[in-house]
Length: 590
Image 1 (cartoon, one colour):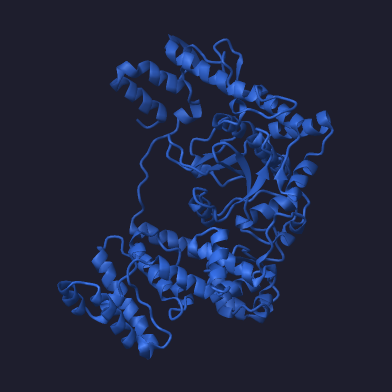
Image 2 (image 1 turned 90 degrees about the vertical axis):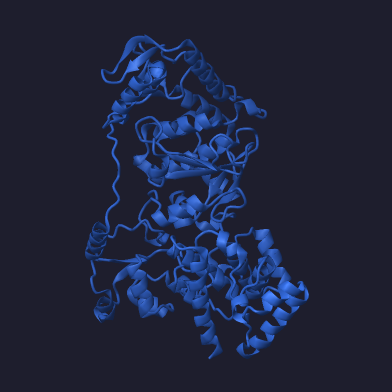
């Protein structure tokens, strides 16, 4: 059983009663997939891991980066900084990075507030690259400033940014995506996808596949319209409206595309969006690449025919010159699959609900560039341009994001300035102090904009006070609350214990009084034990002012320790946690 086909044949032998069903399955899988080998991936041992790390380090172009930066002859070397700030937003390092990330030569980093250590750390973490002026200056795709990009091109998301997208969700509120209003005439899904496809064409250029090129050509020649003008106006108006005649043409266009890899027993091609009469009655022999004389069960044929008819009708029935399109003809998930296969463009569809069948909050539709859907959607996502949309079960909305400069890249390819687009967010440097604090609260507390503004307003626009009060009100168990004046800690602790004791019975009072002030105060928040892993490292904790925000420090430290000690029990983690808190407390009491 070394290939997919051999595995299925083996299963068929063991389950003879399922022969027809398995043969039907085989007939619907292309030869390339069936011939793929099946093997077990072995985890590299620790020795191999060390070798891999060594190779990675030895591949670095500059071995002694400190010496390189100290050499004054290198101060005018060109650099490209990652414009996505990876630092903790509440840290001083974050603000420094915001100031110097626009540097284009090494000496500019110092002038803009960066330090020698900042450059060394950033370089080692791959946050910027040094350009050899003698070689080609092809820019990286890691969110670089657009003044340095020559021409257009798609962005391949980095692993870190793919993780951001993966963790984002519309079940509550997205942190990294914003919606662009879409016309609610019943064609909302088609408005969104056509907008995305036209933008894809101006991003990919000649890399667009023939179907996308033909569709764009039809808009220009058949309707005498400028596709770029349509999508540019939509961007400027912050509302996606595609002319009805273009949508009608698109519906028919996708119906007419045939699949060059699939055909009927009589030799006629099958369309990518299959018709009712395009369901073969014979089983396909994958080894000999021909139909057998064995017939597929009639109930399976009927089921496929009914499904195909329903899908085709959902597309064709929505071709109307005027009026609203009823739900029967709205965009379907199966149609999105076909569109992805036709145009070779990934469509990433979030949902504001959990799908009842698949128990997911999104569908990732990726092409394999062979006229059909990719098998490994997660693995292939992130390579090539992506269209992002969100579905609330009755309406599709187009999405924008500036993760890795995604949205700015689109605007650049359309010949638009970011300032021209009313909906585009201003850069952090031009935001008011209040707006910056709102963004920080949204990101740190994972709340929406309305809640962040209300919280800030309740705390007189004091960011630190808003964070502290929110953490205080949300905690359900005591945690260390180091006072500003360390000398008053003893009095505070005694008062706290006294209050707690007065509310309990005698037995409880006796037990509590036997506990030390310190052990009571060092108990972590209940929410810590159930929260997700921290995005911070131990070194990042240094950017948190413990005296001002002890609860944040405690929570992040506890999560870091839990991640660092996966096989340890909670009491063991708690002991290490207590020791570290004692250590930092002693520093503040000195």
